[in-house]
Length: 457
Image 1 (cartoon, helix red, strand yellow):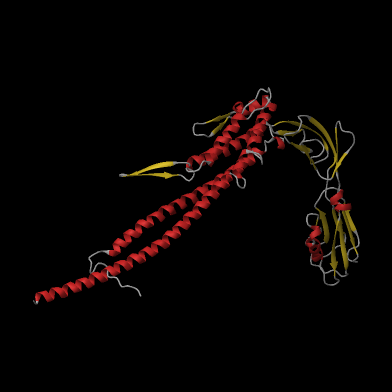
Image 2: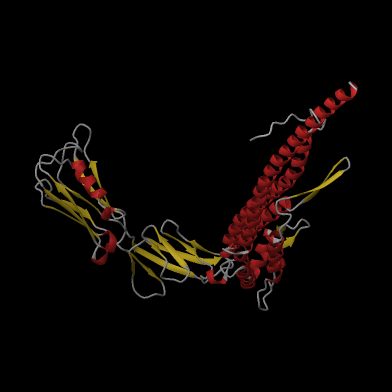
């Protein structure tokens, strides 16, 4: 049975205020715990953002690793870009190649010569339309079924295009080669791959509506390179398997020369991207790894930034700077360190990149610059690089967040336990003060009665 309480009526004690003060003192502990949880969650969010920035930096540095033939970029310059162009990887040898293109690769086009007055003209005769694309193992066959007096010209094209085997290989369409006054609709086919192997086209039909065909067959690319005997044939106009590190793009027949050389401008741009990405990380860390002293009259408090209580961010910066300092060409080249490639450190921890200095030094000693860049990238990027130690599963960032999550779970458990104990304490104190009021009221009644008796004596 609940005990009724009328606070202080008998005892004069404001029990409700005393109980509230007692509970408030206990709740202060939970308030501090909630603030700690909020900070840990904020730290995890900042670590997530840091992780994303590190992954972006890793992708930029990765192109310079030895396994990726990183280093000074190469470029191909064509004497006649209307005939062919070229791109070059960092492993390409600086040289000049003379090419003569006698034929470029092409797709096939074909049609049935039978004419119709509209795209939705109904075909009179039943049967099938068969489209064969490619040869040998690369061949596919697509068929459309015609129901005489029902199927339209457009529906035949739609049947072909909806066949999964046609995807990426051939497209059917209904085209009007006539005019609005005298329409002339034909069923036309275009292969989507160049070269005979995947682009060759063959049309056939068992329907009397389609009797004759006209096909311009797919062709392979054919070209010669001075110094290489014989004609080279490829199914595509993009040729990247003839000269190591060089990819030719054939666009027309004729002769042109391609020169492969160093591209220090592109490399400088790539280095600038790395510096910008690193500086973005430094600025992010500087903004969040702070401790502000807040003074309010006689009260002084320290306000911590979201990364102020973890070492992960500062450890990364130290490791990255060490990689910059230790990068070495490993030889007696003129360029042997990052500082000789226009990199310097500012007082706030960011980097400054002198693009002109980089271009000058890399242009004078491409081998030395390549060695330095590869040495740096091998330490920083890839599965064995320093960044991966932070971003991988169970890496430094993941472990820091896991530790925070464990602490958050523990704090939440403690909050719930204290809330349960506090609720029990409030109930217990309420009952105790209620009993105190009852006892006090009874004593006061007895006192009054006794006083009345004594007064009558």
